[in-house]
Length: 306
Image 1 (cartoon, rainbow, N blue to C red):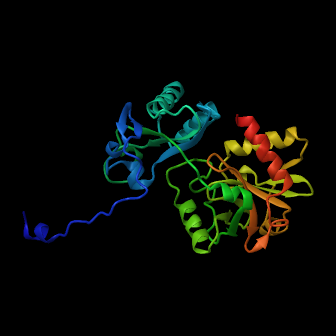
Image 2: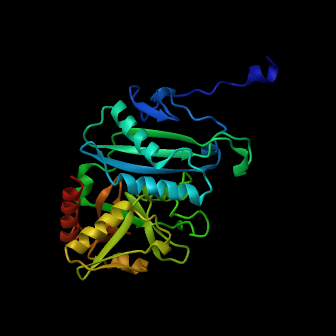
Image 3: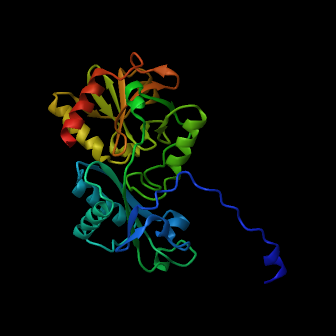
């Protein structure tokens, strides 16, 4: 051993309270592996460059919610970043069910489906990787505690702009989530639960992990896809449910002022489902409690998914 190597101190690792449980099985490239042994190589471009795509999917009553829609969006995201999927749609669905069965999920749960560019040489060229890697986590998730749904989220309007659609498109559910991560950190530092992101032109886009809806005059308003949003699957369900209720839904350009004068506000997403937003930049939304339309749509969503 060289003198320099001998003098290099070992990195001391503390125990991780957020580590997954040891009995969790991960579906990794065709094999079921105990979570502590499920590894992605340090030369994987998903790790080195955030080069890959993913889906977060809910399980209700042992059934994968909107399974085909999520898998279709995964394939579209992969195509958009020139990543050739190593599996068919059917094989991906079979693998998700295999991961569920291996972890004994027969009730509610959550799936994280991830495809990386795979191991390659250093350098950002997509030609310098050999084979994409796929892994599936089937477990539980609770994004917010129950009391949040009773009181609503406190939000700030983030100072960090949403990625421009002509950069890394937010419509691609990619592993490069740093834009969202930094916005969420800004909210936390401000003492808020969540951040609402604006476009580079100052229009309302979405929250860090959820689409956003406003209510004025009994009508729903939500930013269109051109405002740098992910076309959320839960968002689509909520629009469908609202229209079944006879509510008018507008996909329209919104500004910060619209947030401040909204009568109700809520976010939608796979993990959060429908979560009320009751304060924005220190201003109460409506009377500062979850509103009647938000509550009705939440009840409708629960009925829809069960």
